[in-house]
Every structure is written in structure tokens, then in C-alpha cells.
Image (cartoon, rainbow, N blue to C red):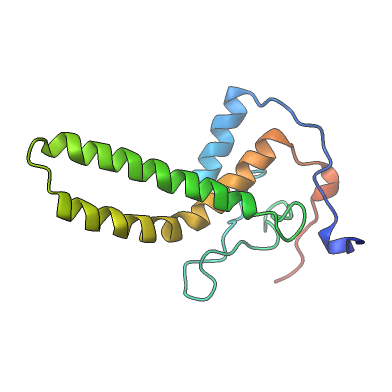
Length: 153
């Protein structure tokens, strides 16, 4: 099975242990949904129906290709999304039980938690894509070969 040029890995760099300062800087960029490399260009296309939850091809600032390997690059974002949703569920459930003990509203809690488990992952997925890209850039720094100036839009 041969890989097409567009699916070639662009991340064949050595793994590195990031410093605390670099980690905080990149996390700040991720929270603003910006390119983890330069902090300028937005990663997501937008919040409109039809394009919600998809990443741009490249950064408008530095030209970093956001899908750093093959078309399945953001599959890891789904794992991060699932982990975040499960963690949110567990913490919310425990907090609700502890705050309302001994008269826990079990019916309301059941419906609220079921709704949160459906809506939460869908709403958080675009953010998890940016976090996944940021973690990748954090442990596999961007090389000059990965940067390409974006052409006119």
C-alpha cells in the first residue's frame, strides 16, 4: 500500500521533553484556539453549521499544516474528547451527589447526566482537536520543512 504525497508524514522529528514555560505558552495558544506553533492563525474553520468541528488546512500566520500526518491524524482528538467527557461526567456526578446528600435528586441527576454525555463530547470536539494538535507540537516540535507560507485566500 503506497502513500500519496499528501498523506506523507511530516512529523518525523525526534520526541522532546518540553519545558514548563513552553508547555504553558502552547497551552495558552490552545485555549485561544490558535496555532500552537506561532499563536497567530486560528485552527478551526468556524462555528457555523456545516463547517463546525473542522480544522483549517494550514495556519494563516506561519503556514503549519494542521494535519501533520495522514487523514486519520485527528483520531487521537477523539480519544482526548472521550477522556474529557468521561472525566467531566465523573466529577460532576460526584459533586452533585456530595452537594445534595442525603436528598439526592436521582431522577434529575440521571436525565442531566445522560444529556451531558450526549451534548458534551459534541460540543467539546473542536477544542479537543486543537488540544491534540498542541500536544503533538509540544512533544514533536515543528521543523522548518513543515512550514509553508499560505498563499492568497
